[in-house]
Amino acid sequence: MRTVLRTVNRVLLGLAGLILVALGGSVLAVGLGVRPPSWWIHDGRRDVLLSYAERTRWRDEGWWWPTVIAVLAVLVLLALWWLSAVLRRRRLAEVLVDTGDGEGAMLRGRALEDVLAADAEQLDGVGRAHVLLTGRRAAPEARVRLLLEPHVDPGTALHGLTTRSLAHARDSAALAALPAEVRLRAVKHRAERVS
Image (cartoon, rainbow, N blue to C red; front, top):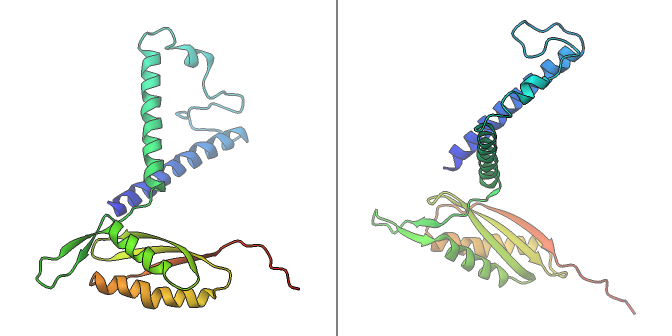
């Protein structure tokens, strides 16, 4: 589903870009004095996009305004769906655990996230941890955000996370690998007065 959405996103963006470049470039070319072909919507530099007759042609028809409003509403709903699909991060609902019997078991992704975050918060100098699992059921990936205390070395915290928390999660879920993207941020604090 994720790759389908990515493909649809790229195709729609590409088509929208081509249409906008073609229309904008042709309007610019006609405005600069290039003679357009006979079938083109503009005749010359002084031509308008829509004439008064074209703008008011269907105004008195009873079906015109409901149709315009319905088409615009559908376009707005499709644009909102597309935007929410692009902005939404896919959270992994379940992780496939290899039990050795060929069947496998399902582990809730939220449960693994909570355990991994709790384990990371036990590390020295980590104030808070947030974990998000993405990827596929058989090959999950972790996005980890750590809020570090002022005294901790970021390298030490990162080493503890990879060798302890991520290793525990990988081993307990019987995963071959658990790649992670880790973002570190320090707690804001006032400067200490030296006396």
